[in-house]
Image 1: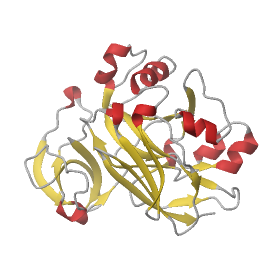
Image 2: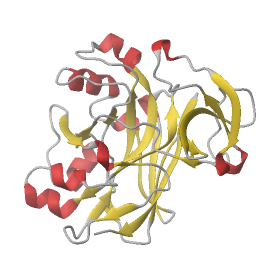
Image 3: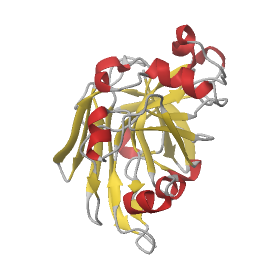
Image 4: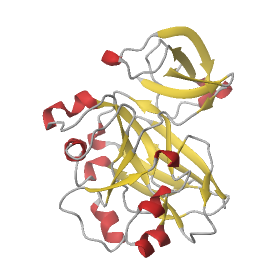
Length: 273
C-alpha cells in the first residue's frame, strides 16, 4: 500500500495512492501521475494496528499538491554506508553505523525547491537514499522485532553543503539547511528493502545507481543500532546512506531520486539566500 500526504482545498490529508483499481492497490513503476488517484483516509495512518479507514473521497493526483509524506520529529541519517561512496570521498568504511541528525525543518516534499545557501556555501551536493519511516514509538528494538516498528519506506535526498562539511569537521551545518531533506513522493508500506535499485538523476542524466543489497549495514542493523541510542517516534525518518556518484547541484537543475517499488522524488534547484 502507498500512503501519500497531500493538500486539497487548503487542508492537509492522508490517502491511499491507487492506479484506478481497488483501494489499497498501489501504482506500478512508471505509472503516469495523471492516471493516479488518492483515496482519502480518516485522520492519519499511524493509529493502533496501522489500519486505515477510507472516507470515500477520491482525488486525482494531478489535482492536489503532494507534500512530504511525514513531518518527522527528527531525521536520523547514516554516513558512509556504501563502500564505493566512502572510497570516493577518501574516507574509511566505518566498523559501526555512523550516525548524524538532520533537523525536521530541512524536510520538504516532492516538487518543492532545494535552495542553495549561496551566501554561505559554494558546493551543494545531491545524495539519493532509501528512507525508513517508523510507525510506532520504539526504543531498544531487537533484530527480530524490527519489521514491527517500520511503517514503510520512501525516497530521500540528503542534500549536503560539501564545502561546509569539510570545513566544519562535523556535519550539522552542512546537512541542516532548510530544504536539505526532500522526502517522497509517498510511503510504500510493503517494500522488501533488501535488494531494490536506487537511481539518482540530474536533468535526466544518471549520476547514482546501486542496489540496497550493497548497504554495509542493513536495515535491521541500522534500526537496532539507532534505537539503542534514542527513542524513535511515529513518522520519524532513518536515512540509510547514499551510493557512489554524488555531485554538485546548480540553480536550474532538476534532481530525481527513483527507487524501484516506491516511485520517484523530483525537486528543482534554486539559489537561496
